Length: 270
Ligand SMILES: [Zn+2]
Ligand SMILES: [Zn+2]
Image (cartoon, helix red, strand yellow):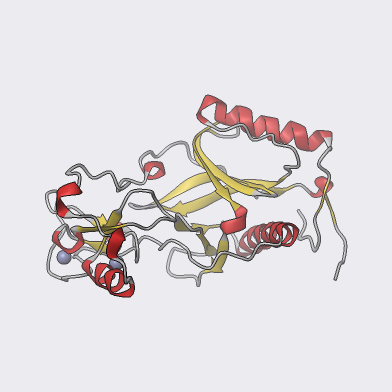
């Protein structure tokens, strides 16, 4: 394992091509083709991802341009529920240790933000350093600026026995929890009965809490993002269920993450 100061990609390395095709095969038909020209697998490992209901084990693959994660069906053999995050829009934010939540950081993107936790402080530092290095290199190459606006991190259900807006509604099987897509708060139905178009997250208007709705509508001169009552669909299509939260699958192994040093040359630059 290496902490690299400069990553020189050996795009044509046989080992790299082989590793990428192994990852691709592990996802099978449930995943996207990953072997695109110029792509390098930088590292991989198991992280605990904070999901809506509770923390869950997920397999992560860091490429030089994307971060891929999925559920572990059979350790090192089969993964599903593939998620691909373009690194260009990622921003990391270190988290303070808190009770059982240790060695964590936020992965913020324009469409989704969440917390992950590594097994040790050292692994956390390695992951963060490698991811940040990839982001830096990408932005430098493309000349693009880092994205400023990121999706809210959802407050986990267990942290909100009551609606965080009206503070009154207690959640039950009938009084279901909802998440505001703007601030991530857990709110009751009546406190989140508005929709607002948040183009970074969806082409459809999304559920927002009344507090955020007030801010969003007052800051917008043209309220075209608001959805008239009659156009609302009764079925919640706003992605209320976070699909990768649904299944608990095989437990991840406790091995350390692997970063592929043989594919990464270390140079002091700048
Ligand atoms: Zn409420
Ligand atoms: Zn809100």
